[in-house]
Length: 39
Image (cartoon, rainbow, N blue to C red; front, side):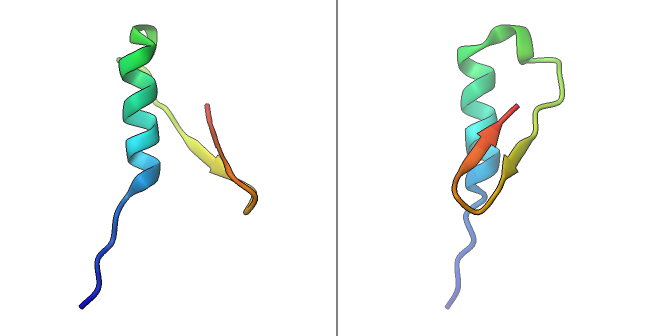
């Protein structure tokens, strides 16, 4: 049995909650294999 969790989408959703100015803007998550950057 396998499970997949889309954690990057969770980070983007949290950022939109805390920054209402981003609610109608596209949000991306970048990774360099050391961590994630939300822009």
